[in-house]
Each structure stands twice: as C-alpha cells, then as structure tokens.
Length: 449
Image 1 (cartoon, helix red, strand yellow):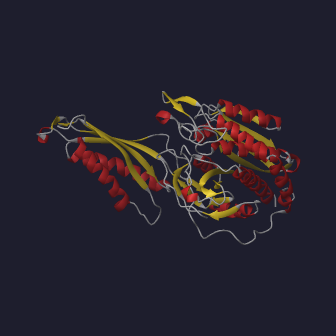
Image 2: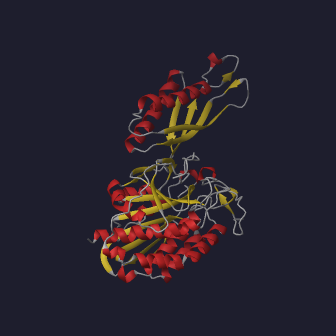
Image 3: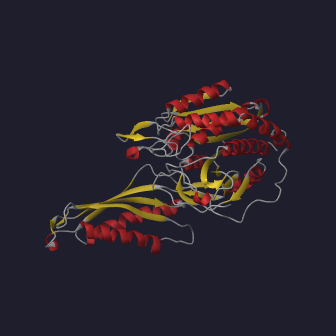
C-alpha cells in the first residue's frame, strides 16, 4: 500500500484512507469451491461488458447529487433498474432507501450488499464535464451539493453488481439482498436515519441476511488496491455538546460571580486526562477532541455560560460507554468545584465502530485475492465513522476500501474524501463490481460445501 492515514472531518465523515502495511497478500489464494469457479468467467465477462454503463450511471448520479433523505431521483433510477432485472423491490425504506431481493436458482444463504446514496453540502471544484451545479436546502440553508465522498460510485457499483448477479440467477446458489441506503452522512439536528432506520423498518426481514458486505471508495489508495482488516476498521463517531453555567459579573471583580470560561477551560483539560490517565490505551486507541468553544460578548464582562462541542472516536463499545460516562462526571464535578454546573450531551445519532467479523474476514480474504485487477492489502483502522456498523452488528459483516486514485499518482497527496476537489478514477468502479460479485458467489458456494 502507498498511502498514509488521512485526518478526517468531525462526526459524520464517512471514509478513511489507507495505511501502509507489509501484509500484502502475495501468495496464490487457495482454490475456490467448484460452484464459485464456474461463475468466475461469467463475472469477468459480464462486469467488463457493463463497465461503461456503470461509468455512465456514476456520472449521471454525480451530476445530480442529493443530500440525505432527499435521494428521490437516485432511488428512482436504482429501483427502475432493479425491477427490469427481476429483483423484488421495496421502495421508501427509511424515507428514500431501496431494498431489493433476488432469489437464485439454487438453495443457499442470503447475502446482503450495501451502497450509500447521499451527497454532501459541498461546492464542487473538479473540472469535469459532469461536475455538479446542484443546490438544495440543508438545515434551513441553501447549499451547494456534491458527491465528494464516492457514494455516486457506490450506487453505480451496486447497480452493476445487480446486473452481473441477475445474469447468472439460475446458477446462483443463494439469495441476494441489495441495500441502497440514504443519509449515511447523517442528518441535521441529530435525526436518526440511514442504516439504523432501514433496520428498524425491516430491511433485514424476510429474508434475514446471513452476512453483509460493503465497500467504500477512497482517494487514499491507488486503483486496484482493496484494503481490509479483521476487527475494527472504522471508529465510532459521536458528537457531544457541553453547556457550562456560571454567573455573570464584571471582569474587574470575578469574585462576585462564577466564571464559566475558566470552568470550561478546566473541563477541556479534564477530558484529556480521561484519555491520558483513565483509558487503557494498550487495548484500543481513542480520540476526544473539543472543536468549538464559545463564550462571552465583551472583553470586560464574565458571561453567564460557556458552550463547547466536539467529537469522540473509539473502537471498543465498552470503552466508548466508559468515556461518555466519565466525560459527564468530569464536567459536572469540575464545574461544581468552582460554584457552577455543567452538562454533557451526546447526540443520539452517533455511529458505533465498524467491526469486521474476524471469522468472516478470514474466510473471505482469499476471495479478495481472486478478484481480477485487485491488490488486496491489510490496512490499519482509521478514525472515520461509517454507519455500515449497524448492519454489521445485526449480522456478520465485512467492509473493505477500494482505492480510487489513478495509478502512477501519489495517493498520499490526493485530495481526500469530503474535499471539494475529490477526484475518482473511474477504473476503480470495475474493481468494485468484481469485488462484491466475488464475495457474493464465493460465500454462497462455501456455505454450500
């Protein structure tokens, strides 16, 4: 692998870049089950024949991006395509989501595949003929809209996978369930959406998947690179707010009031003491960052209150809950010690860490090595958040990252996901189609052994 881990934007940034690792799979993979091997030529031929169609879908979606829970045009495009292929299609799941099922000609397990559909409130700065000029209303504001995180590619890839698998339906030893998900990038005001709402509205019902696979395009790796690892691969993503109450007084006589700025400053340091002295750092890393600090309106007036906000990133659920608890206790007790009060509020729309099931990862790693054109590599976990985590909590899951920076370019210098200059090498789309197709048929064939 050729890229460093990129720093991520707060809270809902949905992707990590790849970290260099010496653990590249170079030895030939073990033979696949005969039932899967028989389908490989069909995957190779079908995926290549529709490559331009997948690229065209991606460009169309890129030119018409839609924000979370507004993906009506995208969902309609997806649903129409899947109906033509013979999928049983359910629309309007979690507002705009699409769930589609295709039963193969032979008995076998149910494999779920997921693609997220939403764009970001970002103004595009990429000079391509299909650049976005779209605008929309987001949290009451008129904003520019861009697919700056590769979700347009994810949708196009899964539409391509649908066509590949439908072409071999009679020979498919199992059932495919496709999840086209809205609102992965979160919604305003802490609204619960995305994968959690899809699950609550029955996305995994009738039939329930045995496993779920997903991918994410990233400029942090070159085209052909497929990054994976067992265990946590993305962090939890939790936004918090801290309200510190004091008592207003003149700056010349602070003893007449309670200074919330001093208390809030001590709370910031107290939070870092949780990180440095109360968490077992040998188990998993964590990140606790205060991103905003607002108080006062005049240089010589001590205000009544101070407000802060920030993000917490963890990889272990027990550690996540422990840090949340200690943050509340630390803030409250520090404030009380100075005569004030403080309350820590965590937004309800936080994401859990995305954890790749270790047994499933070990089982499917050879499949990644069989994908034509792919260079699978074990990567380090990153601090980005992904709500694929909730699908992977419901059933065993495997989430991989697909490089999208053109070969020959230094991926460490590529514009990161969420940048207005994010650029995707469209050759990565074929890698994505083949990756999900191989994972699907291999898992089905192995389950039938």
